[in-house]
Each structure stands twice: as structure tokens, then as C-alpha cells.
Amino acid sequence: MDEQVDEAVPQRSRWKLRKRWPWLVTLLVPVLIYNLTVWVPVATKLGEDDRNSAASVHVYRSWLVHPNDITIDLMAVNDAATVDLSRALFQAAEALKGREFGRVTLARQGKAVFVMQGTDFAELGEAFSAGENPVYLLRTLPEKLYLPNGEPAFGTWSGGWLGVLTKQMEDLNTFGPSWAAGEMQPAPAS
Image 1 (cartoon, rainbow, N blue to C red):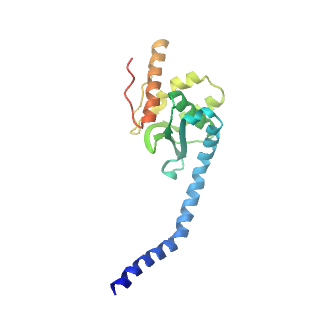
Image 2 (cartoon, rainbow, N blue to C red; image 1 turned 180 degrees about the vertical axis):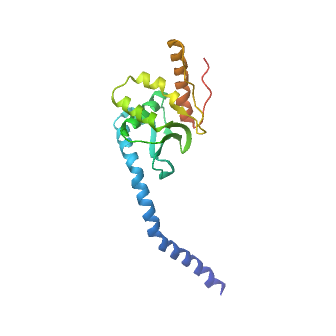
Image 3 (tube, rainbow, N blue to C red; image 1 turned 45 degrees about the vertical axis):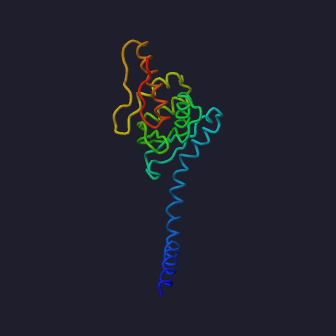
């Protein structure tokens, strides 16, 4: 008698799964298609530049379903330098230009490292597409970044141009390793 009960339980579990399978597909297919609307343009743009092989970047809707927020997820870093990571970010912004986002999360293997306002991300895409000086874009990038808790990740500098430029480059040199490591790194020693 015990043998029959043990065999009946797995059959009932399989029956429940078979009944729920169409619902699962019905929910997952639209989520997949929805995420392809941001993943495909960015993957295409990054694939056009051989230099992007130094890092693997995936773009998807935050929480996979958020209508206004996206995540740029750094999945793997081979020999990527800060300039490589920044270029990939600029190209992603260019690929998604013309779209409005509320918030853009820069993540490392799913863990949020930095957050950028959607308007700053859109301006970055427009400027990069228009041929803005990449050195200017690089040195002003860190001041647009926030930590996941909402605090500014880096300062906004003022004063003499040489002092400002020095501080901006220090921030940039902290940004790349921090994103690659998945957590805020201490500033490099001067």
C-alpha cells in the first residue's frame, strides 16, 4: 500500500507542472521580448567594435520588467581598462539614444555598483553620437554617477582648470576598477 502512495505523488506533481506550463510560457515570452528591445540594439552596437571584446556587457530592463529603468551589467572583464568600460557605456548610450529612462544602473554580475539618472544617460548618448570630445565625456562621467543608496559616488569639482582636471581624472581612475570589481574601490594613491 505504501508503494502505491509513493508512486502517486510524483505523478500528481508532474500533472500540476503540465497544467501550469502554458501559463509559465505566456508570462516569460513577453518578458523576454520586452528585454530584447534594449539588449539587441546595444549588443549590435558593441559587436561592431572589436575593442569591446575586452569586456562582456549585457543590457536589460531592471528587475526584467521595469518600464523606465535599465541595467547595464558587466558580466566579464578580461583585460578591460577604464577607457574600455567607459567606451562600452558610451556606445550603449548611443545605441539607446532617443529613449527615455528614469534610471540606469551600472552593475557587476547583477550587483548594482553605480546609478545614473536617465537624463544624464540620454545626454551621454546624444553627445557621443554627435562626436563630442571623448576626453571631455570621460572626465565628466564620474560626476554623473551615484551609489545605489543615492549618495553621489564622486564629487563635482570647481576651481582652476588643472586642479579640476586632476580630480576628475582621479575619479575616472576609481570608476573603472570599482565597476570591474563590483564595489566602490578606494581612490588610487597620488
